[in-house]
Image (cartoon, rainbow over all chains, first blue to last red; front, top):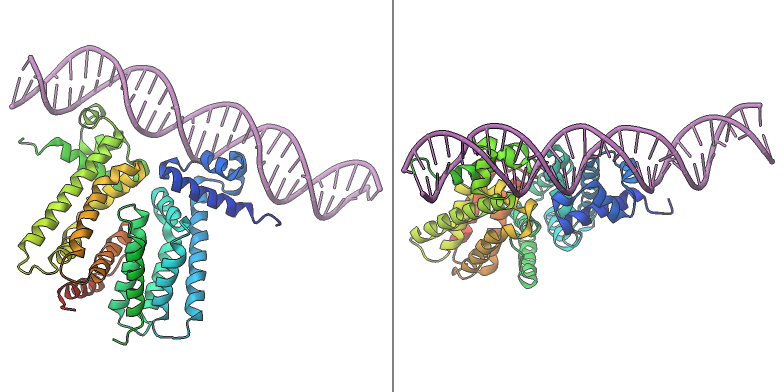
Length: 180
Length: 180
DNA sequence: TTTACTATACTATCCGGACGGTATACTTTT
DNA sequence: AAAAGTATACCGTCCGGATAGTATAGTAAA
């Protein structure tokens, strides 16, 4: 209790390993070492590598879900609030916390159904976004552009400059506010 | 000659393995088997796994580059031609050919600099797109949305319905044509 | 005769997971 | 209150299987 659940610490350690050494080096031993625990101890909490990765994904999915929901809830304007929440949280929070990135990478590599919690999330959000009071296609494009920015960063394909990123952010927010 | 360069066949085989069995099962043996070649034969062409993955990336990068360049060249309207080319080729061609997906996945997993050819590509395109005669931020957003759609599909995060995809495609093309 | 292979055998390493213990704290029995 | 039992949270070692890469001898075709 006093110690904020060792399980979560292990999850962060695993993310760190993926980020620093790549997916192929996400081993139980490396994760244990990073978490300052023994391999046996790690296996006690997560009985297999797959369980570990599942833990990562579930943790980040619930975190992300909460953030978006809170942000939408606090928005004074109803119309377009889910789109704005998605843009805001993704640009300003998910961005910093690379756990999202590395958890996805690990999940994609390990097994296809370990991505289920994320797929659920996106299904929910897509639904909210399409009934958000603005043109659904436009709303979808705003979401896609937001995804494009962090996914291409996750993949190391393209890193947008911060000035340009800010301009994109502003324009997307504008579009989520327009009457059209 | 008669046989269209065994090297390219091997590359396709490797993609197929990644697509069907995941990154962790992209082994030299599995690739050789899929290509109908012996492991020794594979190693003859690609002396290491890293070389194999590099081959995949280089091949798909040069293919993609050609397609975009051709498409832009054939566009009768100068303004916005690179943006349109990017949208067109990505939606209509790169989409079908999942080699892009699997090559990237493999590269990301194996080593960071094996992605260099792709990064170069994106740097070039981003440059063209920003000097394409339309608002650079808008152009960037169009590109990002296009990326969002295939990257989220690559990741298995979200698969857009074909009707909606078509609508998104049309709207993005419209935006690439507008005066604004 | 060089290029493009096949086939087989082998080495060295790494990794997931199992397992047998240990330490501590809390609970029940006597 | 001492003794016995139980649950939780680990540690450290070991092993089987898989895999990258090497070596080598031989074959077929251009």
